[in-house]
Image (cartoon, rainbow, N blue to C red; front, side, top):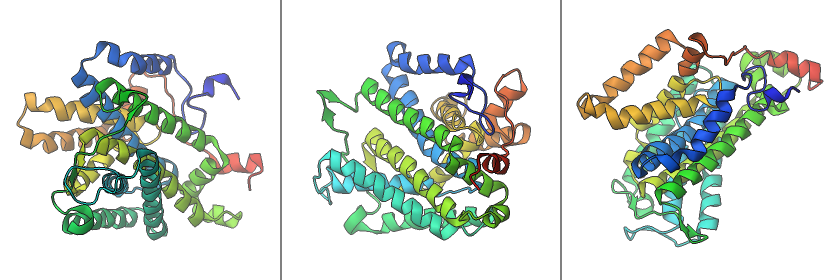
Length: 346
């Protein structure tokens, strides 16, 4: 394989561009010239939202399954961190060490994502969207009305990352680099997955599930496995989210915020793993600075208009605009079935 396809591969991915290297250098050097506000509130927050949205991109972009429950999956991981670890509200807080709490929280989120997949994978299109939306709404009301386990409307506060190697990981620079490391790991994991036999099979089930069944693939199993992997990604993002906010409550997993994850993924672009991160940066910048131009209460109106404009003029999101107006990231529709047949995977 050509070395130039290291980051973006072929098929649904694009050829590598020098901008990728420049972007990596910029992200690593970012805290050296950015203020604490931009490092923490803009940089780290964008990476967290991008990571959670990446789980949706994997499901929708490679599997054709649009799930509105990814924030609920992330939220469960956040709640598990508060319940199993330490918090300051006097409810639950079992005091487990972070090195045990975090893996259990992520695994719990992945199992929750798998259960969502088992329920929804036999549906398509609008039915999948409605089922996953119903699950997100049910999760929101469940945590809001359950006081014994989730502390109801109040939720949990005083949830903080550990101090490790003498570093307090919620300090702006440390937390930014932690978020960057997680985002980079899952970004390259998704890129690799897209080029693997499983990734090609998943894309093929999206393009022609009937033909995949005919050549012997278990379409349902592939889709459920994708939900499990997406649950790992969203769960890790949920752990970072609760550390970022220092608290979690039903408002953190509300329906409006769940839809924001879809908006971020679509605005950035669902055809490449970098799209959710681009969409997250645009969303966070609007969220923080749109109030200088308009009333805060009209923020959702601005986001809605931006969403409509991107969808109308570029169904592939901001990446599609880059491709249309002078960018060199060229996308080709994947021929997943043909690749599988050539490789003998069938």
